[in-house]
Length: 261
Image 1 (cartoon, one colour):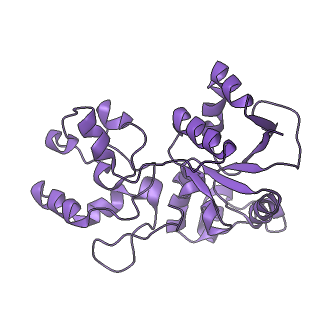
Image 2: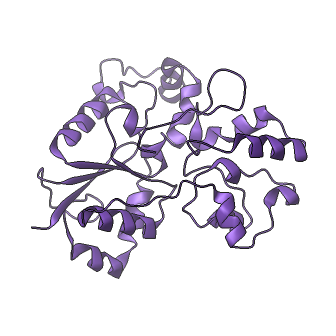
């Protein structure tokens, strides 16, 4: 029997699922080894019987948390898909303000206090609610990496995800360092696996694949000193995809997101 895979979406743009749909004819290779039993973006059929659950999106409401726990209880393996699921992503920017203030800003004076759909708490990554077995990083994800992860899991193998920084891929691509061009890049502390797509095309890395669990602190501090940059600016740059990744205490110490990282 083929491995059964189901896709679920929470708070996100669903762009990572569209990346999968954009595999087009390459999907046929995956279908040979897995049975997709639920995927709202591309099919009407749905089944609650699945081996692997792939989750896109961040968790923003109690009802989301309840649904996520139910999904976790039904699967053998759970995969977090894309930045919103793996780190909380852009949605987590709102955690800088009290939830009540955010709701007031969005809905103004609308009477929503008795509507469960609008109940909310601070945005969470998937692994802040339930255990996650594997991560597919990025905003959006890399389609080739998705194929690698799902194929590996279907064949009973452990997928290999890079644990080195984007800078390594930049050097492989023979790019001129963007710091030398007066730009601020998070490549030194961001997990590789995207083939340095942004720096290669002249745009600084924004850290969408998440901050490394163990960044080279001495290297980062040397870069800050060399280019006359501040630690506070580094923290500010991380806000887009990695809100609260830094410990409250001063110093170049980063929060480890997960033992599975």
